[in-house]
Image (cartoon, rainbow, N blue to C red):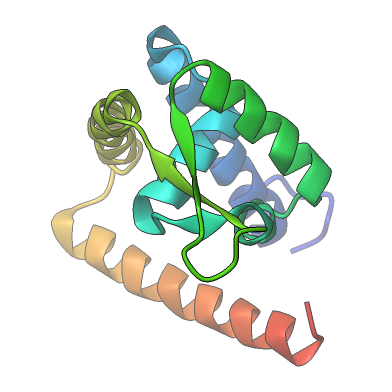
Length: 149
């Protein structure tokens, strides 16, 4: 297979990820969040109390960009900052009740999007695809860690 082939694995993986994001973005548009904002919601849902620096690392953006995003989300009632008990210079980030409700709605949409995307696969193929993708992800995480990334 050559890089000119549309079925080249690198193209297929990139296109699948991009198309899932595109379909999901369209489906969550009515919630009123940008992709960057729903990424903040999902990260803080999984890691409540993360610092701004930790969130920036999770999002792979600089601290200033994360700070601006958090400022907007705080202003719109999605995120709240709380002082760290051990270090007053650090603010911990938490989702508001509205943000947790939005996350729940987003999660339902995400599950439906994945189910729709995997509809052509049998249950066995879905399980196999998930296991294989997890192995590739693990390999890539090892490679990234080995390079200090």
